[in-house]
Length: 86
Image (cartoon, rainbow, N blue to C red):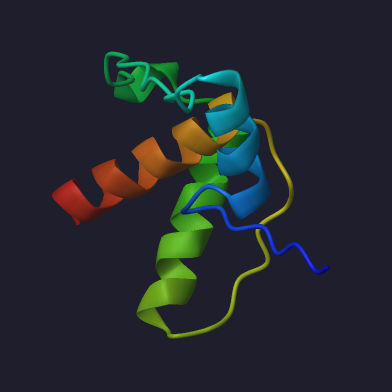
């Protein structure tokens, strides 16, 4: 028996277990946060955002290093600001 997982839908085994226990699937809740101020972005992450934007304009590939969620949020905020004021 092969069980294939999916990010989008619940697996058949998980649904069967919930049905056996008379439980409903858990829902993920989105955490709403205020947008970052431009001054709150770290200089290193701001530079990475500018580099990504520059490579995108030149249609060059970019290697994005692994980072924490807060760091990724700062890079994305930099890209938003770069796009808005470019």
